[in-house]
Image (tube, rainbow, N blue to C red; front, side, top):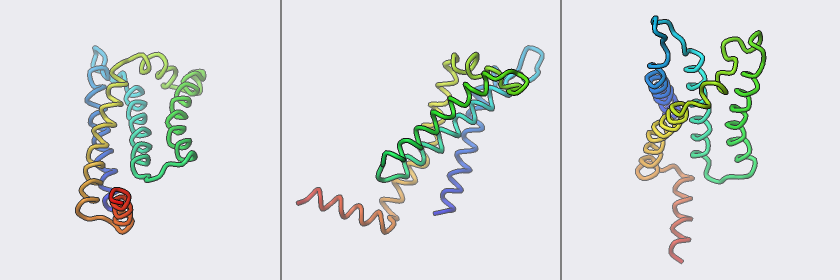
Length: 155
């Protein structure tokens, strides 16, 4: 189980890196060939990481409680609030991230499309693995859940 999570993390990290760099690449260089968008690339990649980790937690949980909803969706909201607050600080503190989210990324439709596309494409391998594991190699707790489900289905 731990090896599957490690492999999934490696696959997700690779997908996030390459999808984000390829999507931001046309904007990442100015007319003289210098990098202009490292800050945008970093914020985009970390936004994708925050979404992927929280969506994987949401898929791994079988029964949601109020506290789980608060922490999963709250951590995503906290990330965006952090971007707003840190970007609003003077450039002395926020250095190269000064208003990056508000002035460039939040207004750019490609940021939101990349974020959505990366989330879907990283969830597909995890979801596929989960389905295959449940059908062909179920764990004991999954067998118990399946028996409970079948009992409810056939009175």
